[in-house]
Amino acid sequence: MKLPRHIITKILSSGETAFYYNVPTKYRKMKCPVPNEALGTDYAKACGEGGRAETINGLFDEWDDARRGLPVSGIEAPRIGTVDWLFREYRQSKAYTEKVAVRSRKNYEWAMREVCDTLTKRGDRVGGRPIKSISPLGADKLYDRFAAGEKGARLRTAEKMVLLCRKAWRVVHRLHPAEFANDVPNPWIGVTMQTRVKLTKHAVNREQVYAFAQGCVARGEPECGAAAVICFEWLQRPENVIGGHIKWTGYRTGPKPTIRIEHHKTGAVIDHPLEERLPDGTIVKFYEDAEAVLAKLTRRGIPVILREVGDGMAKPYSFSGMQKIVQRMRKEIGLPASFTLDACRHGGMTELEEAELTEGQGRALSAHRTRESYAGYAKRTEARMLSATRKRHAHALANQIATAVQNAVGDNVQNEKSDSAKSA
Image 1 (spheres, rainbow, N blue to C red):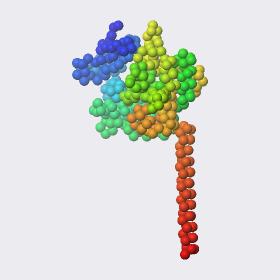
Image 2: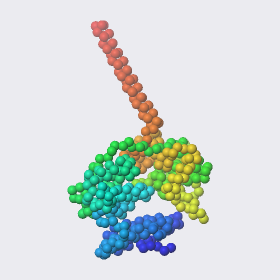
Image 3: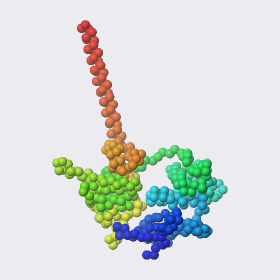
Image 4: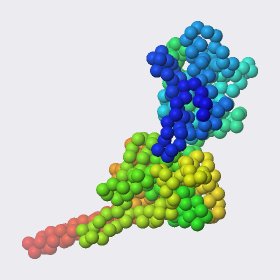
């Protein structure tokens, strides 16, 4: 295979060839801002015509020409100091390449284009305007236009755009402070956004998850069913399940029967115990139903969730591809439209609260770092409300009984004093 400039390859454990954009060391020492990037295993997308390598090499050439004092040759190269340039710098920063999940980047790209392509009253694009020309008043007006739905955006979308701009301004200001106004370097801080009713993400229950899993097995899609079970029982993020971050090498291979769950977002690795031996020798299996679903999978490689691509080869599912299978399966099985892999994970988190685990116990299983991030997942279900109501009712009854006993004791004491007085 003919490789573009600065592309290197590595052979993965699965046997596939992965492509990486790697800036040579001599340019890295010259403070080249173009980041190294993993381009995946698809040659056409990584190295083909119009592929990612061609795009990144264009950015590299632009930087190299500017370094040598040559005119920038890129036709679409934004002028330094403009909003277009700011978003390009943000996309190249570690704040974007290392912190923004791959599946979220499409939405980020859309939001940045929407902001840049918005026309001002003069008819020119916001993206072509200098960064210093975006004042707090201008930021407020942009938000109002998005919130009003001028470009098809709603309140939540407009809110996301403000948060994105606020972060992009902050990241690039740290790298290029001279391009920003000294008095108000970030006009997006303090934008007053309209109050909106925040939608609660759906959560499915145990019965729905296993009905889905068994239906998938019966219809020849056991990997899809297993993904739902893993998200529900072991609380792994769907993108990690699909991306191969749960492996056969972490399933019942150590000295103790456990399953290893990797949370790529936080870097946490949790070994969930699968069974326990009681003093009398009895073995209690904690996830017998889940393991029965895993037993239906064909071991095609190290990752648990893989799809066959022919000739004995296998590769991970794409996120969109798995989503399509989930929706097709849930329609055939007769589950509601709210059934998704995310809803399975939210359902598992809600079950932790219904089981009345303490926050510390719940976070030990979910691997959330903060109580705020953990608290947002558990839904206010009928079971949780009923449990809380029972406890409150029991508390009220206990207080009533204590008051009655106290009054009875007081009456007895008073009667005894009265009798003593009469005897005297």
